[in-house]
Amino acid sequence: MTDLQTLRTALSTGDPAQDVVDRSRQRLQKRIHGRPAKRIWVPVGIGMTVTATAAAVAIRTPSPAARPSSAPRLGPASTPKR
Amino acid sequence: MTAGMSEQVGDAELAERFLRDPEQFTEVHDRYFTTIYRYVAGRLGAQAAEDIAAETFLVAFDRRKTFDAGRGELRVWLFGIATNLVARHRRKEARHYRALARLGVAPDAEGHESRVVASVAARRLLPQLAAALAQLSRGERDVLLLIALGQLAYEEVAAALGISTGTVGSRLSRARKKLNSVLAKETLDD
Image (cartoon, rainbow over all chains, first blue to last red; front, side, top):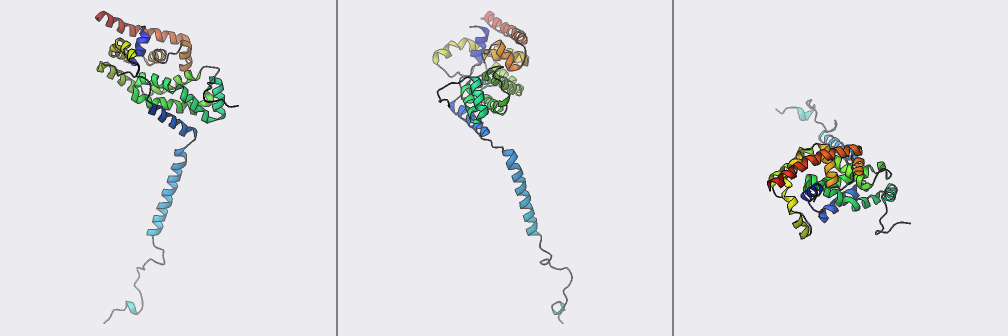
């Protein structure tokens, strides 16, 4: 046995298990079919977050008509009873 | 006319096919995954090999337009990509060799019993070989292991690494000298 054969035999780990081959093939097929996750889902995620935040702000902020006035109301209701 | 599943076309024809139809690139994987896996596993261990061998084919797919059948075989091109990926894991490779050197026992080979029995002598040397490998330069180790594990010829190693055949020869010569000093010492100790 030559030194190179000795090295090859010593370092040999055997063939990959079938599930290892299958997983690798699946990864390749995903790449082939193109799933540019970062390019599509990141902007979509950002857009959804912005929309949700804007909606939450709109809900929590009452419209001027609904906002209670800080000024004292005039009229009978505001007149203290004696 | 399309080829049947059993028909094995040459690299140039296969390259034409996967450039026309990316799905055909799975044929490259089916042909060469085991070969690339064995090479990477010999350098980094089986656990890391799974990921890096798989990544080799993803990188190859992304770069498929750069493959030139006139300059070499697909197998050689893939070995070049795998070697570059292994280089990113230099620390892991060094750790792997140190672990093998400490371990003193080789991992079990999957295979026929007689082959395992025949390899006992070589495996007994693994700690010393691993220690010697850890001391080689990256260039020496790439050349040595592409030849020993990948079973590439000088010209193929040169094509895979993008260096001259003269450089392949000189790196291999230095690496073997260091390796043989370990083997000779072991023989003398026996």
